[in-house]
Image (cartoon, rainbow, N blue to C red; front, top):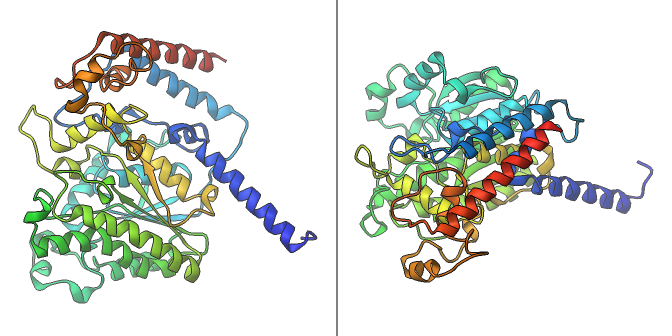
Length: 443
């Protein structure tokens, strides 16, 4: 307090930059698993797991996961560093309806850090979700301390409606909404305020495009506006009604997708436009909410996940891959980090954006996609297939599209041929990592 104002400002800036650098250097966002209260990545949340295609895990891959789990457990006794503690914080996550999506993963990581978890669930699936919670979600619900994640309260929430006056009569009479009231955003916010008094963390993990399977050229006005309303404006409305409940320093996070800025054929119905709108709104809301309440607003551009909602986009026949499976394969074949993306990767990134390590970060679109957003040329392109097949040795032994699948012990899709050098390089890479990780656990 005795330092000159300019010097205090410089010290504050340096401290903030140091914290952000610490956050940025977290390897693959998984180093949060080395802090108390934060769960390590689990295979059950991997993008590569879906109802249509499961990876064939090799012993090396299984050993690698075991070594990682051992290292994470051993770290529980490590000297404390940055321990993320959200005890006393209330987190409201909108759009949680099962244990397979990003919303659940974010809730889980916030719970690991001590936050009180409150969720908003779409009324038509509310009963199914509550039944699932009562039955238990197994390992998906396990926190770092071995206990199941506790959800303090579940509120019915249909983000298509900002207030009760917007709810049409046919919805009120719909049997899927029978017995429910107060499921518009304004009423939900008032209920949360009445029960908990505040919301420190607000998570928007919902989207819907009724015509998502249609090309944009075939999308109707109603379909386009519905996608925008459910996927973008709903976040604006949530900020309008939950923002006043958020103390200074609070954090709001939404989820977007790379289709907002690059063409993803098959992701239609105006959803790409809605995601672009969401990212633009994030920047404007960061300014307005920051000045009005001192609240930070960011969005996470996540890679594809075989969640229940995503799998519903162009469903496949039994035994065949769905649209989302092809998206996942494309990412593994072409990303700078050729690994399956885990739901918990996004959960940990959200945790980082909701804690003090990112206290000076707002208005950001944070990519959590193993680097896919940075790629300009796909190595699995048919146009380059002949050229790539002619390349031998380093660095091409790790640049081929097959490398990521082999490296992670996964079944290589039939459309990819497996050059011998890629197999040898990937196997050697996995074996070396397993040895190093086992040595680390032993130490």
